[in-house]
Image 1 (cartoon, rainbow, N blue to C red):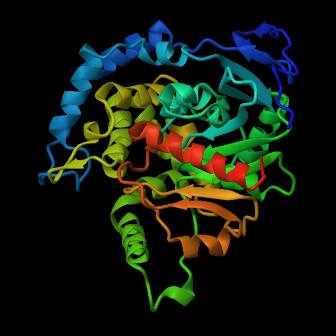
Image 2: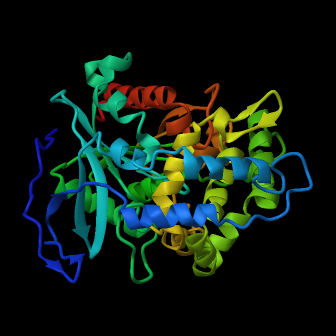
Length: 412
């Protein structure tokens, strides 16, 4: 298998035109992530002037993010949070920008020091960003430092979804998961990889599955943590405990946890006005999902900081607020949420199910859609929807197991 030692094309930057950078289509340009001072000053002023609603009438998160914690987190954001954290974290790895089909794509590209490493494409979801993988990049590129073997090594590519973070915002409809799969295929080709592997969670799972559904792809296998499958009607009279749990989780999502998706998939622009104008509103819209979807209940009490640190939560909020991407990120729901492609996938596929993932499945249900299921693990002990942040070592080891299975099967 041939893996590129560098970029096949790395042209110089285009001209600046009315403060808007014009890119040569095939250019791969170094990118230095940063938020401008005016945006940060405006954020401070808005936090200081926040108007607060009355408190919830319950003692838990069932009505949404509690007022007390919201005020506490906003105070920390205004007074104690380091506004340089996002830029300094991202700058630990090489960042680049390229333009594909008139959309600017920001991505991290970290090569492994091991020459035989396998290219791995990692795709985040909502309300996440490339920062989801901050604790995994070194584990994947330098596995021997973290209990792995040389043969476990990956070259890692982590792009920001269109409309998210530092990537461009589509100016016309049509950028759903199928289009993003095509963009990612072109990105990996532009990086010189004639064969690669792909992993994703949340929307990243959907994009990764869309890669596998393409008629032609350079992707050899995919790994996902959010499998989208329909229950097998033939099993309804003899459900396993895991299948009962999966149905209960789906029903809970439909009844109590899907309001955000209904709004984002039907009227994302209307939602965007409120979130683009209020940093506290943007913060609460995001943090509630971490509280609901993380494995963060301890002694009967739900709190997102049981799974993800306070500053890491605010790093994610910063990626949305400072790039003004509330509406543009939500439009992915409008494009793709209501028309999922559940076609059969024959590409070799692996699934790792974390305990508090939103949607779960049994192996027999999964095999109805994923007919070449080479690895399935539903026995992971901790972690939730944001597995890369919550349990980076566990997810890394799952990717190592997947890769080992591919080697054993002579797929790699």
